[in-house]
Image (cartoon, rainbow over all chains, first blue to last red; front, side, top):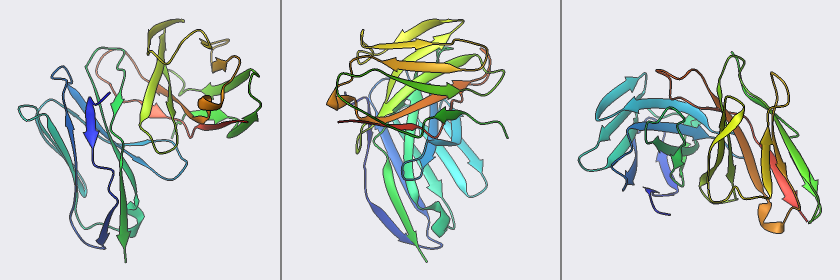
Length: 112
Length: 115
């Protein structure tokens, strides 16, 4: 299944850099878009959650959704070594039950 | 802060055996899920559970799998007759009420190794 595509990286940036992570999707029924952070052998941790098109900002993180292009992004400003993790995009059709469809994850390393 | 917990953290079993993975969702959440992640692959949906019954299941969730909420706090995944390809991380997730919140919170996972 290729409903959600995400470049696995790895992505390596210096501390303080702006990081851009992206996913594309094919199912126009997706309405809810999430970004999770996952450390090695741990569970996904919810970072950001957006509905439909637009931007949402939370501290150093900005999530962007462009439904016309079926493209979502996560920007991390002033990246820190503690941001080093795998970032997973996930989306759902918006039914109450909310089955999530995940991308493969992008492995990010921020070096000091 | 409330969190989803899972036990055991690591389970090793022999091919053909049955395993039960346990989860305690966030209390007052109503929707429960199991996902799995084979090493190096995507997190994949297995099943969702609401109001004491399965709401949706994926093509992966065949007769080998079953779920149960035996009491008010636990949520279990049973895998019968395990196969080598069942080796994966299994994540439990829970979600709050029916309106507003679509955010699923994940547990730390159980690493299942089938030998």
